[in-house]
Length: 217
Image (tube, rainbow, N blue to C red):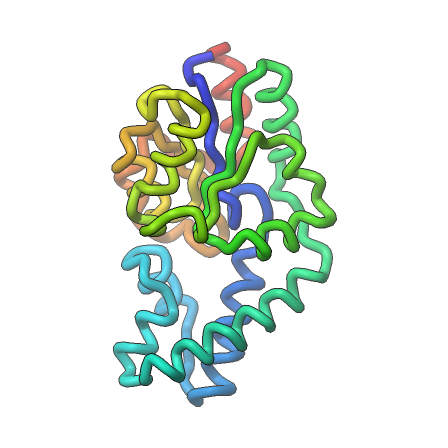
């Protein structure tokens, strides 16, 4: 195949957790501070600026102690919602089976925490398709920094330039490109209106990604 490894973002690529996470942030911001965190604000500070709701709260004059408390309460709400059934993204299982059959190494590179990753995948069975996952705790700087992708390539023993990264957000695309990888964007419902001009290609679904990889095999 044209790539020696394929690296997957988690939220919005493997599983549909984006709406759950946004809902958690919006609810706790409202309950704790009486502020309205719109989807547009969430997208700007999370997907584009890459510093998330905590960064936005800091700009609103919220003290660090309160922001840390927000993060703890938000995470508990998010974990509670993750216990509900989480659906794999359409086409992801077929894509993973194809890569497995072709013996192409696979890893997850995500900005989420490991316990959230494992919690969300309790019912999906998708983690068995991967050699390992690089999570937020494994690196110094998260996306859009390339640290996670560099670490994944190092652990696989594969040159970054021979890796394909699949991402659904501009900051994820920026991270993959900064690592020297080919990056294909598959925007989710939360990110489809954002700027993906840095991506090497843009697809509407993982089914399209599978077709492209099969055609180059």
